[in-house]
Amino acid sequence: MIKYNLTEESPSLASKADEMVNFDWKQKNGYTSRSMHVGVLGEYAYGRYTDQESNLNVYSGGDGGVDFKKKKVNVKTRVIKRPYIPDLILKEKELTSNVAQTYVFAMHLQETNEIILVGEITRDSFLERSTRWEYGSDNELMVSMDKLDKRYDNVTRQEIKNYSNEVTRSN
Image 1 (cartoon, rainbow, N blue to C red):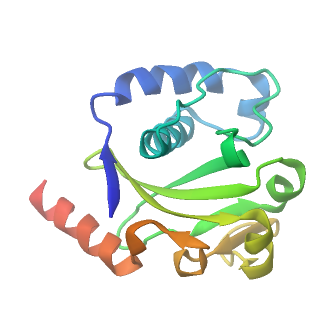
Image 2: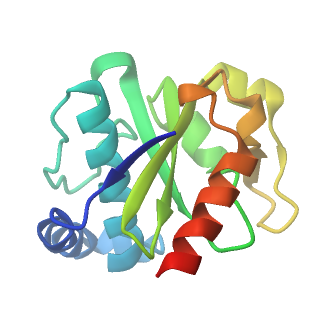
């Protein structure tokens, strides 16, 4: 399992997230400082994993859905809320309006401020394998982690669940 503890970097990344969410269009689209912070943590971890620098610049119109220009990657980070281990969920609008070709799925474990890099899927594969997310709005699609094109270190849902439970017991 590929994981990064970002406790040391978290305060500066939280400030950057606050700066990002202050754009009107971010607030109108439901972004909060917390959700931006979790997203920035995921991007930062993926950057470390791939030896790429995270683009933490703030753009008035957004980044076009591309967090890393190499392979046109968009990192999606979901929070682990035990006992539920999240799936990759995207809004249909993201899939049609963004230029991202690959979506990287990451999870945030709040207790330890760790990011777990789960895997990746191309936009075409996501569209092919996705189903409507039953708990979301009509415009949200999901793919479970076992349907990703590539799982980093062949990580499994059970492995993440076990690790999450172990961390909770030790804190």
